Amino acid sequence: MKGSSSDGTPEPELGLSLSTVGAYSVISVTGEIDMYTAPKLREAVRQLSAEGRMRVAIDLTPTEFCDSTGLGVLIGARRRLTDAGGALVVVCANPRIRKLLDLTGLDKVLDVREAVPSE
Amino acid sequence: MNASKHDHRAEPVTVRFAFTPAAAYVRAARLVAADVASHAGVATGLLDEVRQAVGEACTRAILRHRDSEIDDLVRIEFSIGDRFVAKITDNARDMRAQTRDRLAPSTRRGDARPSDHDTLEEETLSEEITLIVLGGLVEDLVVTGPDSEKGTTVSMSWPLPGGAQSGEH
Image 1: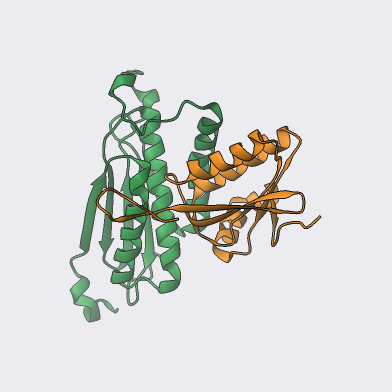
Image 2: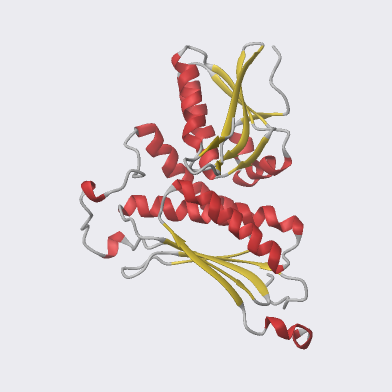
């Protein structure tokens, strides 16, 4: 899902693929989550909740890069989903992003797991 | 002292650029940072840290410019001396130290801060998280400013092989 600008140079793209595992709608994220691409992830979560799919897992295991904007989206998504009676699970077996979650203390705020809950 | 063995570093090599405070350019800035750091000899294991930290500092600078509703360029400077030093400077002055004389909304660019409440909240969070990430990530981090004349500068440095160790706290 790589895009390109009008002059043909590749643009950084956030790849989002949707699947369902048990009760969870899973958004698997490839590419880089930053200030430029984060709105796309935010919108994907909103779209799911608008469809009434309130149990969402965001899989960051295949994600190449995530910055604080991405973390802001995770916090916002958690709040919106839990407020609506749903839940957010962050799936992350990626050491770089785990480190980011650890050093911000978000590993204690977010439900971070190695895999999507199967039940 | 190792200095005599590294006379080629006597005059720091400098890479300097500036960019319009738009989200689309943060990636370019962090890729340049990692590339310049790699070229300077920063250990491979630290390059991800450089990339992340410079990206965070640039994101913070853009958010600060958006908050102040200014389109001034965000400035970046890398210097290679005893250590690899990255400085990211915004131009968002301390608004409390001056009149709240803001630019009219019509002068703002398309990349202006979104009005959506949730998005605003996330961006406010992100701005705070950038500093938490930087503080956790970078051993040698100094943030100066803002005052009524200037914005803030985030200065960070990483060791170089054969460089002075005094900069490491």
